[in-house]
View 1 (tube, rainbow, N blue to C red):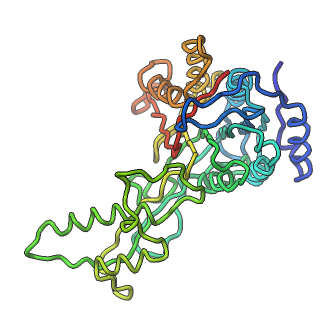
View 2 (view 1 turned 45 degrees about the vertical axis):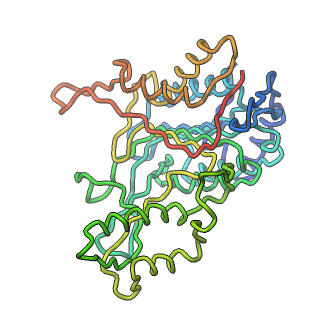
View 3 (view 1 turned 120 degrees about the vertical axis):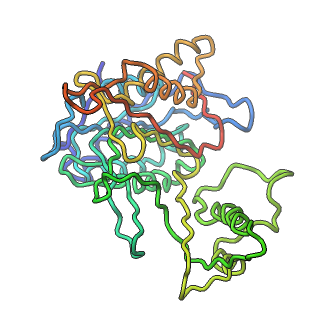
Length: 379
């Protein structure tokens, strides 16, 4: 039986959303088979529930093109996470940006349910783009990936990830985010080839003419330092073992600028160069899967759905078939299957009208994660 889909008209207030979650979670089914970790390198998935899966798919926008395969995506995701993976699924359709934020906020506030769950999943299917961020430094460009609500307002993927990862009841548990949306640039550089601009640190690098390798030495030191600039809020599960950095090599975050000053002769009032430090893609215990690479379009087909979500459904179904003896799915195997299918199979090919430049196109699935352990799901 198909699960109920709540539309934007039913999400009129915070109380409406709270009541929706309370009603669904009240009837949540316990798992039949707990996943018992074989060693400390596996996530503990022996809780009562698999977890909450929030599915949000938008079809009808104020001005943007209608996503005609919205209903097909919803059916695929309800089957993938509900029937196959045994999540408790709550589905929404045609939400504004504020409604999406509200739904995710309420979802993360289900503390009692999360404490009894193994993990958390969220699927966002909508229009999207990369919008320029206002920067104080002249000449520096940075873009944030954004998801569109049906009202054309947006919220950043970064803010969505922060909302999920700041949920105390989900700390140390795997959190999965699947985004079916374009990532095209929406600024004056849209036709330019560019790379991640990151953010900058003002430094003054003194070059020793007698030692041409000094620049490389500086770069190596900065690479080691960059990992300490933005530590995640969740404590890492990696223990200190012989071979790791010694305590003397660790750098306290509050002293980072002082350390840079010692290394490079930092002059804060007259910087001569800028070090660009790339933000980490996600935070601890988080998996983010995009339907396309940065700056690229995302594709799908009418009456079928977005290619990434179709491949996710197919990958989980295939892993269930292959692992039918153990009924144990490795999430990373699912991701590899997805990327291989979309890149190699002619099925995942979008055909544009004749006369179009490159009428047959594909969009590579991209995933990035900071999962510190292996994630197995027993079904």
